[in-house]
Length: 219
Image (cartoon, rainbow, N blue to C red; front, side, top):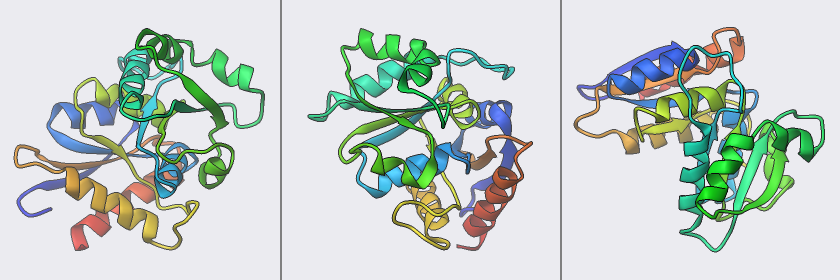
């Protein structure tokens, strides 16, 4: 419990959606690499970080990457900068990455936003590939991005968290940062905090989600 609030652990985009519908603050844990990439972006002073689904997903949930693109563009208009787009594949060309993000790009264009850079979803080293300070960073990925996107259809209290080393944090620091972020977002009308392993098939995500939940319980 966090005070009188619940802490739950679940998995996959479907778990994220259910938690968002039930009124939880939702933390997406995609250790390799979406949430680690975004935590590293926050390390260097990103203005905001978001996740989105690629154009195609097999997840049994509704997603709306165009809306996430529009949201990123509106946030970027509060800054002097454009958007840094994080996308997959990790190894490949920017053209390949952009080809999987056409719905996100359409949303950005409709809000007259601008993609400033395209970066591979490589975790801690991602901020070395482009200047992310003061930027909106939008990560389009198959697991964490899909879960973030799906939950965001039901809640604006969706964040990310990781236990992995980030650009500037070591040891338990990334997890502590995630816990602090979740606690800061928690409101009186929230049921609690839901820690969502982006994929139940990823032992890294499952163990990390459980570890963060234990940290919340014992903080």
